[in-house]
Image (cartoon, rainbow, N blue to C red; front, side, top):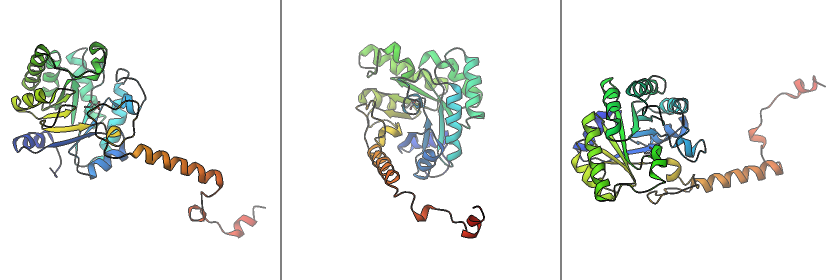
Length: 277
Ligand code: KIV
């Protein structure tokens, strides 16, 4: 996909069996690099609570956080579809709250779509938001905003009952109008079945290779976040180590007076300087 990405491009990608690529970003410069690399969609995830703000979970992330980072990402993107996460308690409380907050992410964050977590329970919200002309991406499986209800980071849908519920939730969010769904930490065979059942694309994270697309948190992909690395992460680079080496080298050069060198200085004529004495 090379033209400006939209929900239509997602739909066509599924029809044409083309994989959709998505990464998280939280700032202008990173989003610009991803966009220039041809990534189809950028998710301003509430994972920013973990990887940017240093919280243990995503519970404390606010609408203001999402708008602040979402708007920065949107300014860096020309082609990718920017999806901004609805943070904890910005949509669970009522369809009215969901609509108002989704509207803020579009108006102030300049999102192309919003994402929210949950199945049947949030279908009224998905319906209300999509009826207002705002595309909604759903999120099923391990939904981090419910981490306390799950009792930790666990693979979801492993029992017959849980797998049936996940499938029913997937059908329900499609029926409610979601244009795509993230499947997080779901056994790959179940994700494959859901992908086959749904007309909308599935975007996997820890859900195997049969999903219609994949998403990763970019700090995980680049080896920049060491607090916790889930099994599903593939490190494409060790940028964390490269950064640490560069920081150490900077410290060495500043301490020893090597940096800044002549080529980093601004000149002034000696005449001007002499007049100051
Ligand atoms: O917040 C996030 O980054 C996400 C992805 C893990 C899908 O929801």
